[in-house]
Image (tube, rainbow, N blue to C red; front, side, top):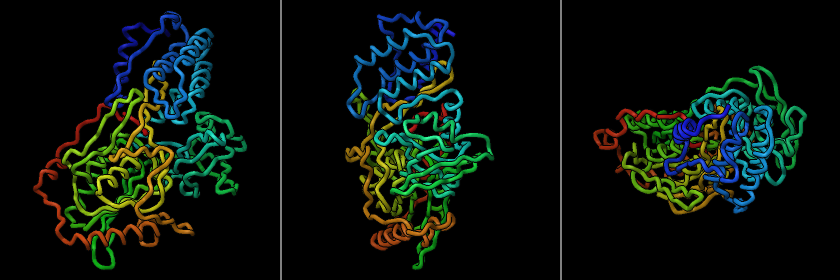
Length: 451
């Protein structure tokens, strides 16, 4: 159904809630094709996507040609689309021209599932994937801890060769998601390629309730109390959950913290900034650069909840938001990184709600660590590189001294604590404590920016 220009403007106004704070989105109608062409057709959603890409897409490879993009619009709008599915096919073919695995279209059902994902729940096997432009296959960014994918042993950087015997070569993300997802209790078979070896994994689909933060206090052999905090995903609840943990642990006189970001695939940009601020009192957290070179700098705001010694655990599955936090802690000399080099995703995506209830994730910016480092495709090297156990450990052994990387992190933390002595303490009546106890501001939207 065609919508009036005024109604369309109102939709765009509401959608700004999904944008990065510094992005202004406007609708650009070409003089060569009048908006009336969209009347009574499925073309409006196609043009909506086209306009967003034209206005806000950040081309990290430098291959985006605006002239060709304008010609493509004319070609697309000259065709007829009898139903929404035909329009969606055209949109996905249009986006293929961008050669950006992170800019993708979601039909209304998929878009709603994405909202649920970032709010803390999802249904499926718990696996985050992207398209490998070189091989054409799907690549695992990270399995979500506690999910069927995680429990089956699927790892970051695994390539998915087939789904239920259907080859994934040149299969787009949306088609793959449809094949992997299904009714709770049903099975899906994935053929995996890892380090030259091919094997099969059969997973049972189920509803996955995501608790963002898990924590415990570990006691070292020499009597130090260590606050172990594992963040599994940067969703809408992560910062609030972490705040409760830190405030509790500060009253229990922990000597330091180990922040575990291993296999954390990322999430919301705001969440990564808020979490960084709980550990960093002063300094830059992250800088983002839009396609027009506009730079937005996010800084600590004097609201850190602790200044105790800190070590961060990272690995190949630590991506995007995890890398923002890791980079902020490293560059501000707030703590040490232990583990393996991170995934290397330095691009920011904005979620856009489209006119028919579908959605678009579009790459709108790249981010730099406080020192100005672009980590996209390179990742962040830890201060101390440590391999994970050769033989897999049980889930309950993660964050214990049976966990080789955790053990190394604990040893590093103990040395820092011993070097600093007992001068580091948290003052309950300090400004930071008052800030921490203030009621958190209500979010206008669950989903802002997904990275």
